[in-house]
Image (tube, rainbow, N blue to C red; front, side, top):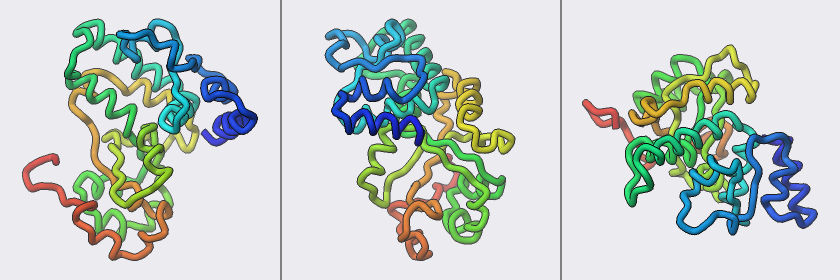
Length: 236
């Protein structure tokens, strides 16, 4: 995201409106247009699917959404196609169904993790002491990549309880740090049946070693309001 983000930032510094600046970020399967181009009464996701255009407001939320399109073009396009398929099947309702809810949650707040098995086991058990203290050296072998644009926006003004929804499918170690390969892998894995199961596990991202200076102190993880234990007999 860094290269594309730098080009976008330069365009913004030169006075370009956000949709135009995002267009300077590199190849992308969609184009970015002013929010005013979205007709009244037309669903945002449907408009993107029909026109290949992303309505974009002049704010941080849409800035990060655009950057995510630049970094994960295949996965973002896959999410949009799944949204459009749900709209075609069910129409636009006042209350979203489980698949559209999960699609939106993924788009806004998801993260991807590539890590040793021991870290995954501790994360899924929400054994925060083991995850972040006992196994702390293993984080040097892990990669946590944020996908959700709302999640990125929150981190502009960070606070301790910011929590990502980590996809419960480990990114293969064979992909290394190649984000194009991550994008292709994710695109292949995203499906309506998978997302309907809400295949996520929570991760307070500022607990990740190296992400926040305060977490160098083990007492940081004693806050049960943030680092909540897994409830017995449930997945929650």
